[in-house]
Each structure stands twice: as C-alpha cells, then as structure tokens.
Image (cartoon, rainbow, N blue to C red):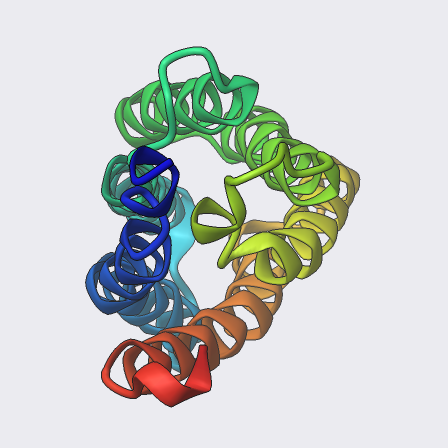
Length: 202
C-alpha cells in the first residue's frame, strides 16, 4: 500500500523542470526568426545572391533551434512528434544549404517554400496530436505549434507564387511570416520563463 504513494510527487516537479529549461531554445528561435524578419524589412535590394545566402542562413539557424527545442522537451523515442519535428528540421537544414549555394531566385522560392511548408506542417501535426495520459509536461508548446504551423505552412505555400516577382518580394513574403512567428515565440519564451520560475503558475 505504501508503494502507490511514492510516484505522486515526481510529476509536477518534472513539468516545472521542462518549462524552466525549454524557454531558452524557444527564445533563441524567436531571436533568429525576428532577426531575419527585420533584415527583410530594411534590406531594399538583396539580389539573388543576397536572397539565397540570407534565406539559407535563416533555414539553417531555424533548423538548429527547432532541434534544440525538441531535444529539450525530451520526447520519448516512440513519440511520433519527435520524428515529425526533427525530420522537418532536417529537411529545412538541407533546403538551407541547397538554397545558399544555388544563388538562384527560382530555387529559393520553390525549395524554400517546400522547406517552410514541411516545417509548418510538422508543427501543426505536433500541435493537433492528442496528448497521451501522463504526458502533459511535454505539451507546453501545443498552442504555439498550432499557430506557428499555420503561419509557416501558409508562408511556404505562398512563396513559389512570388518566384517571378524578384528577390525583394520573396524576402518580403518570408520575412512577413518570420515576424509573425518570431513575435509568437518571443511571447511563448517569456511566458515559459515566468511559469518555470513560479510553481504556483502550474
């Protein structure tokens, strides 16, 4: 009879610990995303090379922060969200490398659109997945994934339609989505930091 009482206290502590740790990679992703978005606002004439290098660097940095977020959440090996999110981060990283070395506007539009769409779809899937019993501590980003997923998927779908509009238009479309998701992740990071340091918020 005494054994049943022992596991009880471990659950809330674990939840607080995850919230306390995950805000750091989430904040890093917010900073990366906002930095790219602000770059697109103030860079009037990027050109094909500037577009490709900037978009490629953004994809690589975003993939790294996405991987860091998933790793910090410590999702179980059998959890499909882990595979989906890390797989999309891998596609984003490969897309970033190809876009950067191609220095081609059409390649940036089409491959960049596919990579962003994959990332958005993965976050949407992760956000919509029903939580299993006892895994609430690993779903602190559920609502953020949903919003970010919709924005990322929409940006990825729109990007190829601006392939002939030039580098500045492509940067504008990608940057607009980045500013929206960057603001979302910044708010999420600050909220997680506050909740992680305040046990009563749980």
